[in-house]
Length: 183
Image (cartoon, rainbow, N blue to C red):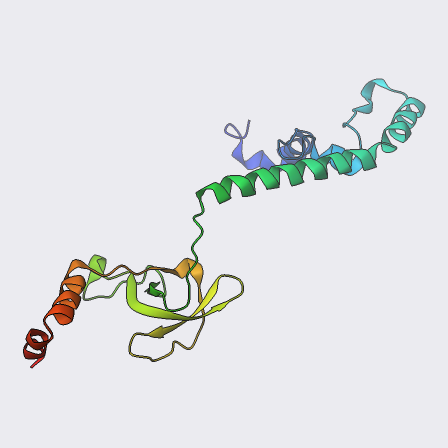
């Protein structure tokens, strides 16, 4: 329709809005018109004025029930959406003294020197306090505190690399060798 006469879109706007407002929505199981007025849209072409008024008054009594039904349908769909989302969410919880990585903020920021090889995580940091709302207080391993609390979704568990484990074992079992390496 509009393809043939693109300049006449404003003449079709009322018809398009009517079609949009009287088409059924999946989420609320009724039309927006029905939700507002409590009944299906009726074209009064084949009705007398009295019959139309009587039909409207009868249908208006059911408006509250339609709105309650639409609300319960929305709540049900919202609950299903939350359940679907929460299936994929992995709960993370950390204890005090756990070592964690912290995401480098702002996320997606790339260093011009490293470009795509810019590290996304930094650390390790030690958890020193747990706050409500999945928020954690962190400190550097040398004892300096981080001023702001970090949301749990921006931290992950720290696992030492093989080289760090190797260095710890050398330090633990061969302290005299480790002392010579440090000099």
